[in-house]
Image (spheres, rainbow, N blue to C red):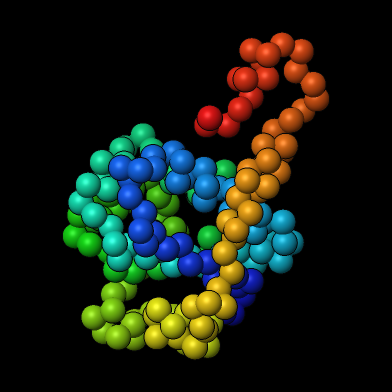
Length: 185
């Protein structure tokens, strides 16, 4: 993509919010994105996201409480040290629009203009108008084989430890103080 170092595919296939909390999913995505930020090119050029909600279920809406949505939006737009070039939401079911309408007022006009919706109904033509077919996976009628995609969470335990080490600022004398420094769990 022009002026982009990375196309990040954020699939939610098989995600069941009865088995994983929004907090756990959010933390996992932060770990993956933090790893991608180690590349200076990503820091400079930013990201284009494709968020696929193909298997999003109505029950999943319960995970998107206003507090979590606000935290997610605030983190991505204001605290995440990387530019978001565009967000393409694909296969968004009707219930997802409720969540989108909750988020919309918290997002700047500039970011609102960077979000667009696409579906397979037009054989991904609207997505192909924005992203070259040569860098899209087969899932979106692109030329990249699905097995050639990079999984940023293959070694998630190691990435978790590395991420937590970023928050260590010397030795905390008491067990209570050390416990208070743990992120999310």
